[in-house]
Image (tube, rainbow, N blue to C red):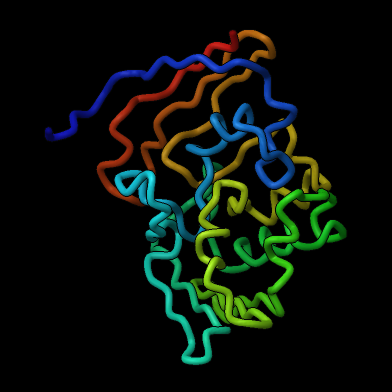
Length: 209
């Protein structure tokens, strides 16, 4: 049917998130909150489940070099973080570096090994991200489509000295509103989302049961 705008989805979750940093946590208790507030370069197509089909997200298009080692991602125009700052290739580079190297963002990500084949990450201009892998890797796009590979604003992470455990500043279709440990969380519609007409919901309210 044709989707309609409006309404708040009410859900239940079985526990509290250990933190709100998707680079640091793998538990669904975190990602049920952060999954709708952050974007990655690419994502899984929800309509293709249970197939893990990769589709565009912040990267509207991408190209793979003939040798299978170079990925060039072209970022969406007009994408903004929830603080109003533009999403740039430098933010994407910093976020992936943060996952791959604990020294970069002061977080030890359990997903760092999934970037172990990466030789370099570059941001030649504000809207282009280039990732070179050491050897061709068929699973690379599928790996970085997971919600753990969220793109964060570099400036915010640096201002907070790497501590994103209690803060969400994403670019996703929903903005973080509130979290009360042991009680509930709430995310609300991002009216300035770069994909026009999305999201349909006004928000999501989760109760911790």
